[in-house]
Amino acid sequence: MFFFIFMNNNSNKMFFLFIMFFSTLISISSNSWFGCWIGLEINLLSFIPLISNPKNLLSVETSLKYFLTQSLASINFLFMILIKFSLMKNFYTDNIISMMLNTPLLMKMGSAPFHFWFPNIVEGLSWMNNFILMTWQKISPMILLSYYFNKNFLIMIIMMNLIIGTLGGLNQTSLRKLMAFSSINNLGWMIFSIMISENLWLFYFIIYSMMTFMMILMFYLMNMYFLNQLFINNMNFFIKLNLFINFLSLGGLPPFMGFMPKWTIINFLLINKFYFLTFIFMMTSLIIIFYYIRIIYSSFMFNYFKMKWMNLYMKNNIMMLINMLSFISISSMILSTFIFM
Image 1: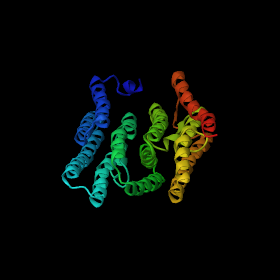
Image 2: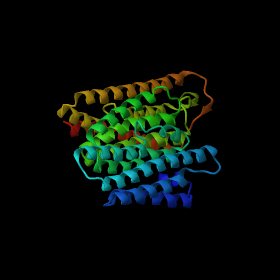
Image 3: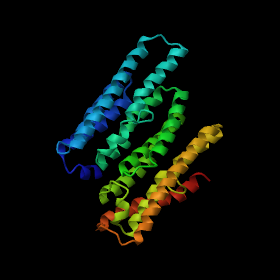
Image 4: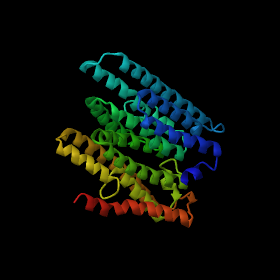
């Protein structure tokens, strides 16, 4: 329902949205690498019309950047598929080919160190398109990555995602770039979860999508794009409380909903004696929670100054929706306690 609201009942964009959904299903259900590549190409060509807007020059520039980077990744992916089936297999070539086949998939999902395009493109998109880019567009590359991967190479990529996603968000004033670096950090958790099992990845992905949806819906409804809008807008206490809950849930602070999948992954790491990787996971999460708390704490403190530029009021049904989403996040405290007792 929200997709149709965000699309403003534009039938052309709805058509491309459905093609994008079906292209992902084609890609993940194909029984050949070439079929997977075709699904990725249809996905790319259906997402470009969604993000392009002739009336907005920044949107046109963003769609061109997205097309060029994704085309580069697609060419590399097709080239590596052809090499994979033309070379004789041995231990050395198999490791090299798996690394080279993983690289374009990582680039497609905006993973570090191939994330150079991701924050810039996120900055030029609307909130609804950002939600698609941060969630749905990661499904196909992630599933294909699980078919054929180099374990040591992916562990190195995971550590880079965690560190770059954490440090990149420290000095951001744009909410869209902040969400982009948060997505890069969460991508490290998701890649490790899909190395463990697809069920764990699905669990993490659903929780992450719900948290991202809560944040993006609130920013969309309040028309917020920069951090200073949290201070200069006269939001009431309950809206700020909802933002506080959702930020901490996205950071993975217990007992909120975002902590549950991270808890599962850390348990697996400790059982299998990945102590250094556990340290990296935990420290990056702490840094992210630190600057989320810093943002929200400042927002709460500015509530007492009379320097407001505008009053922000919301309709009762929108406030009920936001309160319901935050209640889901808080109620996960009880759920997580029973699951992991």
